[in-house]
Figure 1 (cartoon, rainbow, N blue to C red):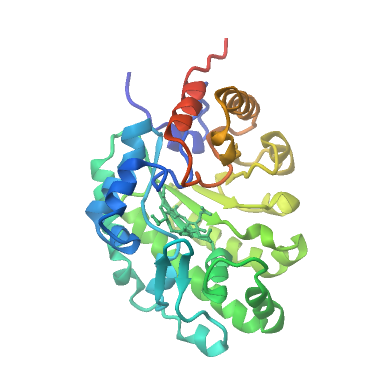
Figure 2: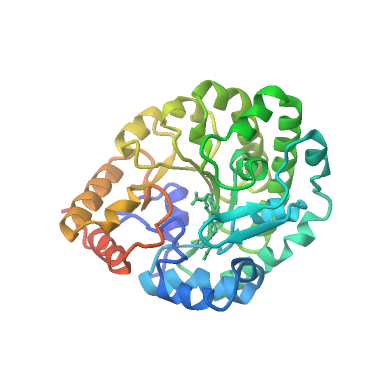
Length: 347
Ligand code: 1CP
């Protein structure tokens, strides 16, 4: 039998009894193979060395046979390439040395030459596609404008996003300039990934859900829409998946988006999400990542529930978690989940 790219084909409308599967953040600290490399290098060195990024990208494919390989990198490489000094601190995560606080800071962000500054990502994409089995789909990605902006303005992870939202409400013109610059940078960034072999694009909007539906619509959505429209024009053959975490309260608005897939978190059921999204998208998700800390019976029950709901979706289903896999997750639980998915028979 010819090997098929199940993940890519699902996004193009084909349905399978056993859905394609991959996990957000599937290359990472829960894997001993990853930790072994991480002992030797800091995180940015790993991202900036194509051979290492390639090796790590392939780890979950070799270990679990996932249908999708997601480029090993980080969403914050883009603001770094725009001139912001970035560090990943142990126990604290990403930190920007000088967060954006004024109009001047935003004006200094540079797009000129960004393609060259991100060329290490494109080299990694190329190497991964060359090393990957034909039936695996290579997923390129970027962070959505507001998710990048949240880190750039707050400076690190934040609880209430007071700086970001204050800028948005009180100096909307500067906020818009920042968002505009991010959209333009992301267009270039995705182009480099597609030209070097990315077959599906993910747009991670981890912080979509920190806004009221009205604010999301007014301040955030126009930029998502602009980016999506550009990507669809530039790369009509490359499916795009949008993952707006916490967006269940404004799914009606998202029906306007010209994307192929929608990532669903575990706060909505796939069934409800499909209804609110009017069956317009292939849905990706949505097992609670913490289920992988439960006993086998619970993993089996919840995986089956997601599969059952996925089977009834109008456009199709890609099995995934509802957000990234957590660093302490037992590898064995991932194998148990995959066993349930792959053992499935629909007689
Ligand atoms: O499979 C993969 O690991 C793919 C590569 C990948 C992706 C797609 C990484 C590696 N990061 C991301 C996306 C990412 N990074 C997002 C969007 C998706 C999501 O919400 O999960 C976000 C918000 C980040 C920011 C980030 N980078 C964090 C989160 C901090 C916080 O505020 O919660 C962290 C811890 C990082 C560093 C990072 N990125 C990736 C890894 C494996 C790590 C850990 C680095 C280490 O080993 O210490």
